Image (cartoon, rainbow, N blue to C red; front, top):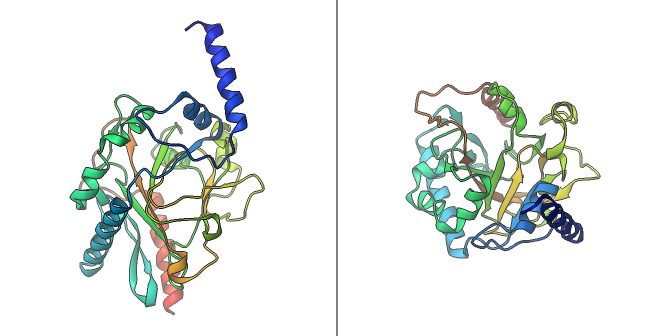
Length: 295
């Protein structure tokens, strides 16, 4: 393709993206289309509807509930140096609100995330992309619940570029791939993004908002509305947050699973891995929150 032809194609695709609403739900086929790539490049996120069947969603939730029950019973506090977020759930019972390395403890989940239907997503990230089941935080399940004693009812504004800085490297593109395990209409809180901010400079990435402290809605934010079985991709360099549900109890429940697709140097973790500083800091904050709740 000549430079002139490439420019004409890009112009045509950009015009198509301009005509699409920000809440467009795409269909995941056997490849990521040029239009989908252009949408991702412009806005920094994509929503694919109905990627998992209802039976698969139900089985993943069953597996997560089993892991949660076993780890609470065994008083497991961290896996491979990564803390588990334990708070209080329904009826004042303990619950795990962030579970790392989930797929290492479930044959079903481990097999599911390797299914051929996800190959287009892997190829989008890179031809040599691997699933980092035993790297970073592994396959993470987040459960948000708005009840007294919850340590994870919401999450403040942040970019994932900050994590790169903690690892001593400059931020680079990181696509977060989420599988959604409950319905989350806009009325129930959920993921909020500032479209296009993955193109911001280094200074704005560091100082545009107060990391994790700021929860205030932004006039330019977009609510990512999802249904159980949806798959989302968002660029980790975007400013994003998780809005607290206005509901309480079971009506506020929101669960999603993030699959790590990696292209950098293979860095497996073991049971003796050091806990990163930002995880230690977060664990201290959650302990203080639980102490205040119990007292």
